[in-house]
Length: 205
Image 1: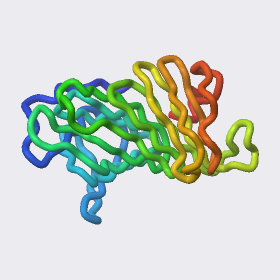
Image 2 (image 1 turned 60 degrees about the vertical axis):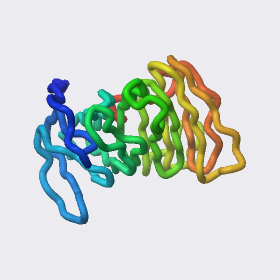
Image 3 (image 1 turned 90 degrees about the vertical axis):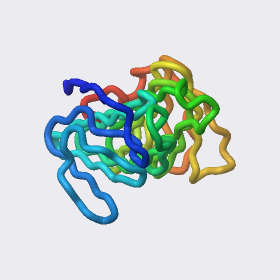
Image 4 (image 1 turned 45 degrees about the vertical axis):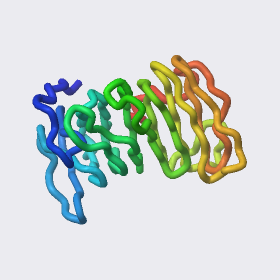
């Protein structure tokens, strides 16, 4: 388990966060250029982070929100809120793998909320702790013909989950202790207690 380092002084203007824990390998892509991720590396909006099969990292933001990226996982920091202690992320794209999110709305006041987007899901929150996994190339439990799906598990607060590929389907709200699955273009499943699906399986780490 990687240890979380202190985020230190307020982040500089234009920076949304920094890498506060790192284990194994990871790559940063910024403006089309690749570089090896290092601990304490500062991050900007539109940065892309990808972990190796042995990689884990944690990004901490000025508002004390954090993202923990698991093995063989890729995210894009799509939209950021910059400037000092209130800096952070308002939208992150999960392109593959496993992401644990802790969002702290307190320092943002009435500012923007937070979304995690996968290729077939939008997970919108205001203040919560939850996990998102996007799996491609493996049959979805209960939908053997579906080879790409998103799982969302909530530990604190609540999240609203929708499928942008099925705009006519109603979103579902998952509260603490529940999870939902979004298979291919199908609507999000009715939330079930955490652990009923495979969300916490080592395969998702």
